[in-house]
Image 1: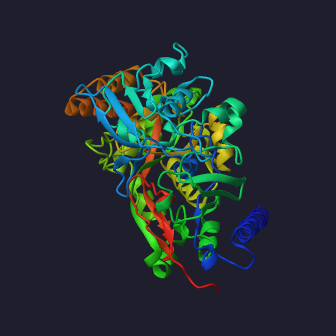
Image 2 (image 1 turned 120 degrees about the vertical axis):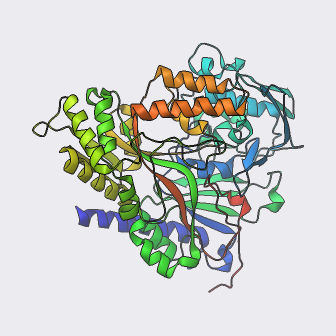
Image 3 (image 1 turned 135 degrees about the vertical axis):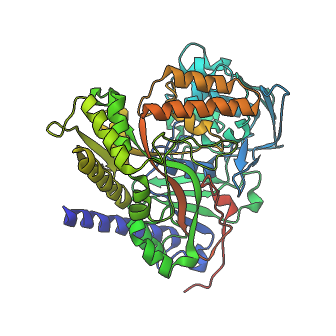
Length: 541
């Protein structure tokens, strides 16, 4: 098995090298002068889609932020700044936002881009026919929830174009995070002629008409995505790159090898197994910074076994998260005793009631809970933990399964699959316990709390709690920031007591960045737009 995996990896690296050669020209690499207008970014596994209203993976969002420009964007510090909209205002009651577009905006094909295109994009996002799992991300917009549920037509969404340059968004409840939300790729405008002609195929390379700094030119599944500079972008004169190549390398060690071979200007991740070597040999190129994201195990709550909250709590109790961070992860990740990460604006992360209790006490309680659930040392729980292939995922799974076995006798079988297969298995509910992560879409606690709301399309554990939903809804109705925060914190405490997920740790951003890549920045959202970057000129070899 190990030999077969190594052969497959070698073939994959050959495909990457060959594609790099075809892009840069025979015998040239990213360090040559001819290649210094082509950025090559490591970008992990293949995106699930490049349709902005359907995509959900992080890898997709990296590319889509370059292809599409929304009303707003994030700056180097992850603060919300104008993008397609040059300015916006909000009413005194916090319910009406008016965004004013820049003059003479164009699509990549030269056609005028108007306010109605943003309206069309958001209507498509919430239309049940689109089946977007991100539809509820704008549930604060008037009528959005009713549209997603099929109770109202998409035309009744509280988004309108009062003229060619004005987008008005009416909310059901106040949402101070709305401008930040409008930077998310799911709120991108829709090129209506393409969609009317091609339907969902409008997002394919060669057909997609976008409005960002770059245009989708090619997508070779399992290898790379190529985007070329958009000359019709309103700020094209400030874009220094001619193209961006996203190298889709799922294996962290393979990505590191490509980086060291000069095939990448930056990596998506840094392999933990190589971290000591990297600190010793590549310290000047290593970037580490806090990130608003969480690594967790999710229960398939459709499984009868996992409907029991006592079992879920017992499994969480015996995991020594600090030991995972210190012994397995080792690159600054924080143990997760809450769901909302620390550092979120205007929020105090809550915590499990046992977070600071001695491990011996936690194990004793877990054993009592296991007996109350009908299990015993002679009849331990048996289930499968499924996760996507990758060194860190395997190490964590082995460590956690060992903790379960030692403390409770749990028999957890481990199954590693490709990321796309994992997502399909989770969607089909063909899993027991699964590994995933959630990355905040904007700097507000609601982007994490909404994930487990019963009507949210990406609520993958399928958690349903009337109390949790009611607390979030009550918080959403508050104009007073302090009262809103109080309800959201109550909601998190209620959810943590139910244990629909097992939070394990909070990420940190980890990238390797070549010295000739200019303009790179780190922020808590882990968002870096390619249009902000450039490459130093270097003499041809």
